[in-house]
Length: 213
Image 1 (spheres, rainbow, N blue to C red):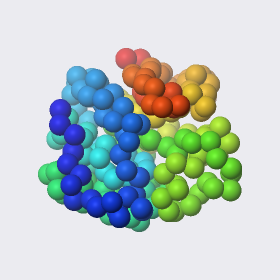
Image 2: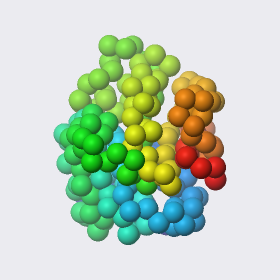
Image 3: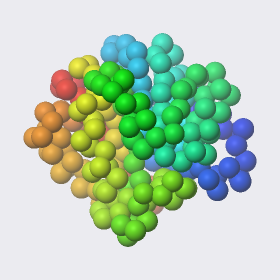
Image 4: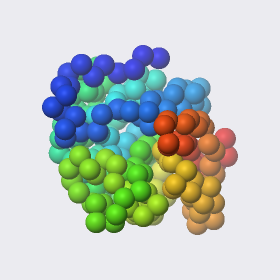
C-alpha cells in the first residue's frame, strides 16, 4: 500500500506540525498488517486523536475507503494540515480543533470503530506538557505517560462494541503495565501488533478491543 503523498508541505510547515517519522511509519505498517481484520470489521466511523500531518488517517482511508474519517488535534496548524493531506490524497477527513475528543461532545459515544492515538510519548519535564504548539507532538511528561494517562479514561466511552484502538508506545511508557490496566479496569483485550527499534526508541503498536482477536 502506498504512503500518502506529503508534497504539499514545505520544510517551514514542519516548524509547526509533527513530521512523519519512524513511529508514524510503524503505525502505517501495523494498520496494513491488520488490513484483513479491518476489512472484516467494516468500520463506518474512524477517529485519530492527535492527527498531526494527517498521514495516518489518510493511509487508513486508502486501506478502507468506506468509512467516515474524523480527526482531532490541539494544534490548529495540525488540524489544517490533516485536512490538506486528506484532500491532496483523495480521502475526505473532518478535523476538529480539540483536546482529545472533547470537541465532539457525546456524538461519538461508543460509536468509533477505529480509534488511533500516537501520543506524545517522550519523557520530558511535566512543565512541557499541554502546549498547543509543535512540542505538544512529543512532550509526554513523567515516563512519557502524562498525556496518555489523561486520555485513557475516554477510550471506553468512544470505542464501539466491535471497535479497535491502536496505540503507539515506547518502552519507557511501560506498555505491559498499560495493557494490564486496560484489561483490569476497562475489560479491553490487547495485542502487540508490531514492534521496531528506531535509534534509542523501542517502539510498539498495541491494538485494544472489547473482544479478543
